[in-house]
Image (cartoon, rainbow, N blue to C red; front, side, top):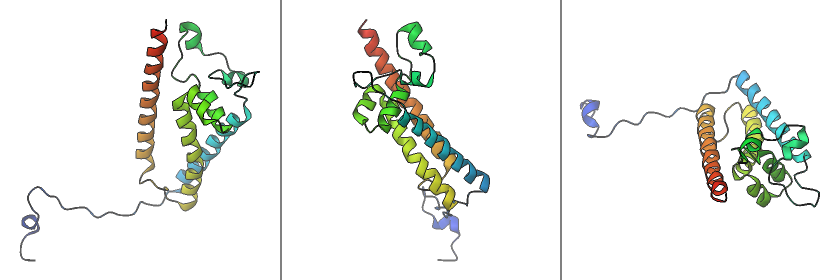
Length: 170
């Protein structure tokens, strides 16, 4: 069989499977960036935990928790009386950090998913930096792109649903 050329040994329509090599070690700047990401995302989650996402009656808010950070009201909402794609993000993050996932979903479902994702990113980044290899993913770049596209798609889908409901109630 060794005398038969390789091109003839392969069956028509099938290609030879390339060898799979382990992922290369992460260079120190990438490891440093992973630690910085863990610190920054951890800081955002800590801010969410420090905010108070409930009104004076103890009822969970649906938006405007960001006002506690001395930020202005949502300009889009103020001008159109319609929520912007990120209305309720800060509130949902804060409610997640206060272990109130049901009300976090009511404030902004995509913000809740993002908050839960961020909770997972902190240990993932630390473990990846410590190991010198990405943990549970093949490449950081491809994973980042997939996550960003999925997040933006979910945000726009949610926003279109919210706008449809808001406009039909007018």
